[in-house]
Amino acid sequence: MKTTPITVLTITGLVLVLVLSLTSCREPGVGEPRQAAAAQIATPTAESAASAAKPRPEAEPSDLDSPVEELFRLTCEHRMKTFECDECRYETGVVRAPADLITGGLLDTVKAVRRRIEVQLRLTGEVQFDQRRVLRLSTQAEGNIRSVHVALGDRVKKGQALIEIESVAIGEAEGAYLEAQAVLQLARRNYQRVTELREEAIASEKEYLQSRHELETAQIRAESALGSLTRLGMSVADVKDLGQTSPRGRLVLCAPSSGSVLSLKAVPGEVARTEESLAIIGDNTTVWVWADLYERDIARIVQEQRRSRLSATVTVRAYPGEEFRGVVDLVSPAMEEASRTVRLRVEVKNPAGRLFAGMFADVNVLLPGKEEALALPRGAVLEDEGRSFVFTHHHGEYYVRRPVVLGSSWGDRVEVVKGLRSGDMVVADGAFLMKSDVLRSKMGAGCAD
Image 1 (cartoon, one colour):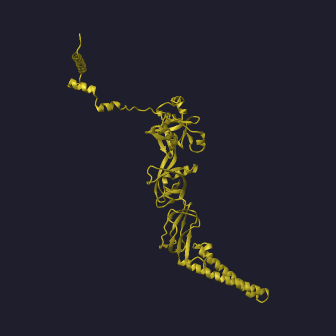
Image 2 (cartoon, rainbow, N blue to C red):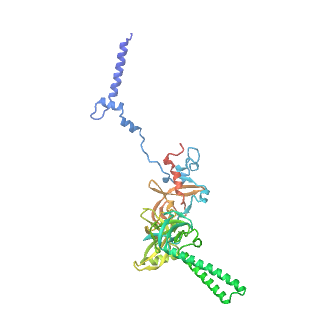
Image 3 (cartoon, rainbow, N blue to C red):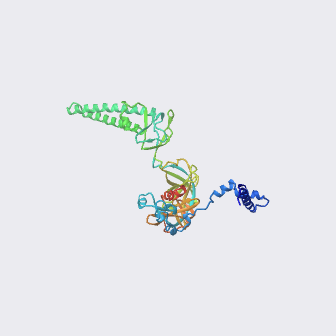
C-alpha cells in the first residue's frame, strides 16, 4: 500500500504528541499545573543557573595544621620534594635560608629557653635631653640680639657663627682692652730705650727698674683686659681683630660643638639676658626619661640594680601602643623633699628623633619574678589570619613555620604556652621576610603560574 505524504505527516504528528504527553506526566509540585512544572524542569531560571555555576567555598587546608614530617614528604607537580622546589616550597610553609643570610646579619636565630617572668613596676616620668650630649648657649653680657644665622633643627659645625649680640658691656670691655694694649706698647718702647741707655752708662739703675716695673704693670693690665673679653664670650682671634675688621660692641656666639639646633629662643630685636639659654646644640639620638620612684619601691630597685642593669619600656601618648626600650642607668642618691620620691633615670635610644624633650611618659621597669616560662623575643612571633606562628629550624638551610599558643608578655619577651620545646631554634630578626615569602600563595603565586 502506498503511503501518501499526508499520512506521513499525520504519523509524525502523533509521535510528537506522544512525546509531549510523556514529558508532561512527570510529577509537578503541589498545587502546580503540569505544564508549569514541565516548563520549570525544561528551562531553569537565570538565578538557579548562576547558583549552579558558582563553586561552593571550601576551607583550604593550612600547612599550620599538618605535621612537620608530612610537609617534608610531599611531592609537587615538578616531580620533586615540595620543600626543595623553589616554586612550590611556600605551599608547605617552608623557607630556605642560606647560611650567609645568618652570618650577614639579615636573619638572626635564637633558642627557645625557659626564663624568669619579669614583673612590671609602673612609674610616670618625663623625657629630657641627655645632658652629656647637649650644650646650652647663653651670653655673659646682656645686650640686644642683632641677628640669628640658624633655624631650629639645622645641623651646625663647631665654631659656626649662630647669634650676634650688640652689648654696651662688650663695648666697654673692648675699649679697656685697646687702652691697655696702647699703654703696653708705650711701656715696651720705654723699657727698650732705658735698657739701651743703661748699657751705655747713660741711664741710672733707678730709671731702669722703674721702666721695667711700668712694663710689667702694663702687661698685667693687658692680660686682665683680654681675660674680661674672653669671659664675656669673645674668642682670642676676635679680640686680636679689634680695631681692624670686627665692629665694636658686638658679640658673636658660636656653636660650642657640632650637632643639631635642638632649641632656639633667640629672636632678632629682643634682649639677650645672662640667665636665659638662647639655644641648645647637641645630639638627641639618646634621651633620658626621668621617673619618680616612691619610697616603698626603692629597696627592691636598688637591690636588683646592683646585680645587673634593669630593663625598662617607655610609652608616650604620641605613639599609642608603641614601646621604646631602655635601661635604668641611675637611681638618684637624694630624695625630693616635696614629693618624697627618688628620681630614676632610664636611658632610651632615639635614633629617629621621635621622642621629644618635655613629653610625659609611662615607664615600666622590668623586675625579675619568681616563676619561669618558655619565652621568645616578640619579633619572632608572627600572625596570619588570627593565628600566631614562628619559623623553626628543621634541617640544613630549611625553616618551617609552626603554630604557637601565647601566654603573658613582658618587655620584649612573650611566653609560649604550646607549640615549642625548650632548645628549639627559632628565627627572631628577619622573621617577617620569611613570612612575606611564604604568603605569596595569597597573591596568586604557585606552580601553576
